[in-house]
Every structure is written in C-alpha cells, then in structure tokens.
Length: 460
Ligand SMILES: C[S@@+](CC[C@H](N)C(=O)[O-])C[C@H]1O[C@@H](n2cnc3c(N)ncnc32)[C@H](O)[C@@H]1O
Image (cartoon, rainbow, N blue to C red; front, side, top):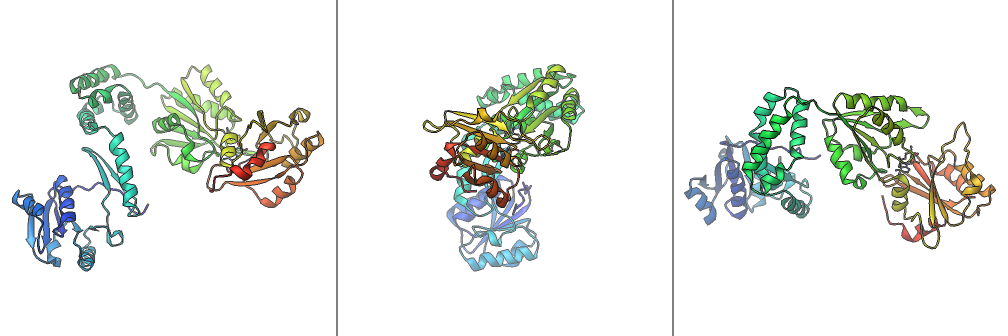
C-alpha cells in the first residue's frame, strides 16, 4: 500500500486552501462538510467562494500565498493553477510537518483525497493511489448504486443501541454474534424502506429474546477453488467473513487467505505430500471441539471439499456430534486448470466423458484398473500425479493407449504462476523431468488437450 487510508477528525481545526477558483471551492465544500475552520488564500476569489465567506463559512485572505498563512494549520490544500505556487506551498507545509495535498499532483502530496461515497456516518473512501482518477470514479459509481441511500440511518440506529448491547453481553464474541445475527434479519430492509418505528421495535424484541442465549456453534465446509480468488463463490465469500476460526489447507492460495476476516483466528492444518502436518483424525476432533465451544468454524479447503478433499470424513464426525454444518462447493482443480489452460474436458468430437483419478503413489506403486482407462473418447484427469507421471504414461501405453495421445501437465493452475507443459504420452516423462514443475500440478490426458493450440487464452 502506498498510502495508509485514514479518516481524519478536522472538526474546528484550522485548514487552509490556497487558490480561489472552482477546484478550491469544491475542496472547501468538502472540508466544511467535516466541520473544518477554514481559511482560503488567493489574490482573487470566484463568486462561489465569496458566497461562502458571506455566509461566514470561511475566512478569505486576499493575497499571494506566504508561509505565515499556514503557521497554525492542521491541513493544507494547494489548488492554484500555478505549478510554482503549488510546489512552494507543498515545500513549506512539508517543512512544517503539516499534511498537504496538491490537487492532481500526487508526487507533491503527503496525503491524497479519495473519491467519496457519503452515507454519513457511513463513508466509503476510494483511491487508486493517484494512478487513475477515472477508474476511481467508476468504482465510486458502483458503490453509489449498491449502497442504499439510507445506509447512514441504519448505522445511526445500530449505534444508538451499542451501550445497551454492551451492558447485556459482556463478552466481545457474544456482542459480535448479536450484531451479525441482527443484521441477518429484515432490519436493513425496514430501514431502507423508511419504516424506522418497525426497525426500532425489531431491535428491542431481538435484544430481549437474545439475552442470555448461549451461542450455537456451526461448521462451514467451504471449497476455496484452485487459487484465483475471483473463482470463489459468493456464499464462500460471505461465510469467510462470518467465521470466528478458520482451519485451512496448504492448497488455499494467499490471495484467497487475504479475503478472510482479518480478526478471525487462522489455524494451518494443511497437508503437504508425505508431510501430514495435522492428522485427519485430529482435524475432525478440532472441528467438533471448536463448534462445541460455540464458535463458527470455517473449514477452508483447496478446490472442492468433496473431490479428493476428505470433506466427507470431516462432515461425518460433525453429523455424529450433532453439530450444524453447511457445505459450499468450490471449483475443483480439474475444472479450474482445464479452463485456464484452454482445454475443454468434454467435447462433442473428442470426449464424451471425463474421469477424475488420483495418481498418488502408495509405497511407490499406483494400482489402477489400467485396461479400463484406455478409451478413445474419454478424458482422464489425474490429481496428485506428478511423482507417478512416468508410471501413468507407461501403463497407459502398455494397455493399448496411442503413444501419441495428447497430455498436458498444469502447474499451479489459475494462479499467476500457472505453467502448462503439453506433449504426447511417449515424450512427456522426459520432458517433465527437464521442466522442473512445482506442486500442485494436475495431469490431463485425451484428444481434447490438442484444442489448447486454438483455445489457450490465459496469460498469467
Ligand atoms: C488433495 S487434492 C485436493 C483436490 C481439491 N479438493 C480439488 O477439488 O481441487 C490435491 C491435488 O489437487 C490438485 N490441485 C489443486 N489445486 C491445483 C492447482 N491450482 N493447480 C494444479 N493442480 C491443483 C493437485 O493435483 C494436487 O496434488
């Protein structure tokens, strides 16, 4: 982050704007909204600024800028059309350690002004760190559409009950739970439609009914997809923000982890091949214990929890212990990697079925029904198959598969480090040794792989 976003209290603080034109007037209105004590300095002023002074909203000093104008200022904005004056103002303010903004010149600023969506007291500030004001405006427009006009009233209403809620629930986690459950009721809709009395009644009732109720724990088994955070489902994202504790796998990408609630407890239980950091049995027990403590537990797994994810076992122990749970599917590695490599897993002309298999070697051996796997119009996808790739290629050829059958190995599919190596069955083992691929990788075998030549679109 180049700039730290902050909300500054400038109520009754002396703020100075240098410049007397339209830009200065716009900045003046913004500072006045935040109740600044405002001085505007310029040799001449627009009629709008004169209007502000007449209404006693600001003090105007008709003069060229001189350093003593900002002696006791808490904040300075340079908004003249002279570059020389603007950088002079910035230098003086920086010397005096006063935060300074020079309009449209991020390099001279110690702070920059964000685009604002104002639903006071709810305020959304948006910045592209000075890179693209047009992009910032677009994001502002989206927020203007999606944040209801009465969001501020909702915040005021909730704020007016904070003391009461604190009194009723001494534990922070109970208070958090109360607010979250309240916001899942129709409260927001009542406020958005202007029914403030009904909204108030709802809070009163909710407060009365919730008093003393012990928190009920729950587990969310969520598929995090293959890596690209844009592939998370909406439900996954919602639950990721709700959970108190998160048990996550090695396969969950950092970009996905960045989307979790920052204050949630995060426990790494991930399994690297041959390095089982936490045994499956222990994970099952942890899920049960944490939920019994009343926590909302997110079990976050790479890809889809029910595809080579042992999600079934985890859910079985929850069901046995009568713990409520939800299961959220994720995009499995086969789908994600195939799409991002431009390989359709089925195709009218080339493959009428697809099989997901594990290529994991048990004591150096891969026991599969090889004969059954040799089909002309079927795609095979091997998870966990990199170490066994020579065995896979050799066995398939031995059992009658065309040695020229196309095969692709996708490393870290859908991420910025995706790499695809494609060849045919016969040449792949030698090629893969030179390629030095890193886990996780997935193997796709079948005529569909040749379509990649025309369908490849993703450039990491
Ligand atoms: C234990 S399995 C978990 C699969 C996961 N539940 C899913 O639905 O994708 C782990 C294997 O998934 C595959 N895998 C997962 N994410 C991948 C990715 N981004 N790129 C390539 N392969 C991936 C690899 O074969 C890896 O060894």
